[in-house]
Amino acid sequence: MMEGLIKNISKTEDGVVILGENKHQETFESNYLKVREKEGRIFSDELVKILPHLPKSHPLHKEWLYRSETQSRFCKYLSSKKETLSILDLGCGNAWFSAQMKSTLPQANIFALDVNTMELQQAARAFPENQITFLHGDIFQDIFKSASFDMIVLNSSLQYFSDFKLLMDKLLELLKKDGEIHILDSPFYKTAQNQKEARNRSHSYFSGMHVKEMIQHYHHHSFDDLKNFSNTILCNPNKTWNSIRKILGQKISLFPWIRIAKT
Image (cartoon, rainbow, N blue to C red; front, side, top):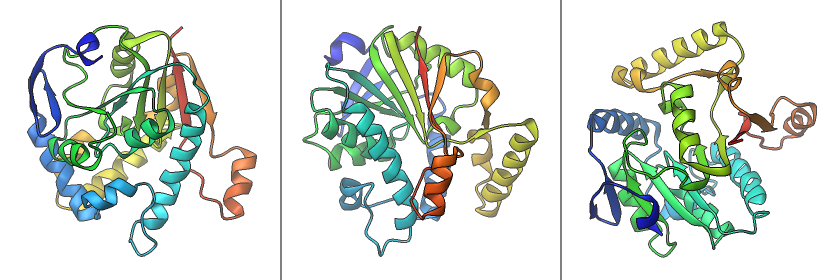
């Protein structure tokens, strides 16, 4: 299956297929990992295997209850798909979400792509039996054939891409007819002022961590970016019912679930 859609395979190392050329990704990975370490988000292999269900004693347990809700909701949607799908998990990190998708839909062909070597190698160690293809590469390089995927998922990864339109155009090119892009757990802003305020918060956050370089890699997208694409908001956290659920203490993702269809 891999040979049918992947191009420019350089080598395979530690369970990860290296695609294309590694252009300027070392700087991003270094700064990204510095931030993740300071946030306490670099997990052991044992914890990665059980994500999103962190132990109650873990400092990030409550935050991952929200991630768990997103995963559960999306996998319920995925379970309704009967056909064999080719799914790209873009910006997969340690690939815990890829593993959850594979468990939900065992017949699916899951491809987990990132530019972060360390987390991909960890994913290959944590999920060796899941038959997931772990890929290191840049989505904007010529690494996939057109119309390769039925579904492309960005789970908490959209914010690492600077140009929304450029990214969506590329992903739509990689989708088969009637394919879908799903954007999960990533913020969208209603106004230019909201975006400006978010940029300022990010600047202060990364500066406070002494990783100012990360500012250039973290981006803020708006709902206006969606207007040129056939999109549906499948879950809006601000809808009345979800607001009531939050008041009742249920963990609902703070971010919208957006589907972009190839029409």
